[in-house]
Length: 150
Image (cartoon, rainbow, N blue to C red; front, side):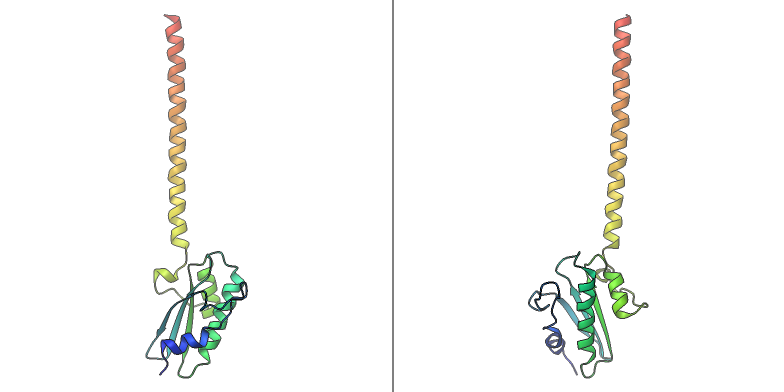
């Protein structure tokens, strides 16, 4: 039976093509999960959420190939986390039927939607502030006219 250490050893010299440094030296390996059925899941993150997608894809494929060639491994899933294209890269590496099993595998989509809502609220507040300023100016102008006519 393979162990987490066996898997880490098999992938520790996978090189990030952008930096030329191994994924183990950069501490990019987040988790290795080994199921009793021979299914191995490796979770990784990239050096930055905006790492070029072709490099993230290349690293994920290299990890998958190395783990797949290990004895007793029946299935390999490689999950890139915290990358702006995580869902797309993970589907390309693991097949179109791949679905995230936890929020950390889903990618940054939820966070973006929350941020967009905050922007909309801020814009509404600015619009309300502009309307209030226009009403104050109108009252001031009317008051000045009314004061000079009396």
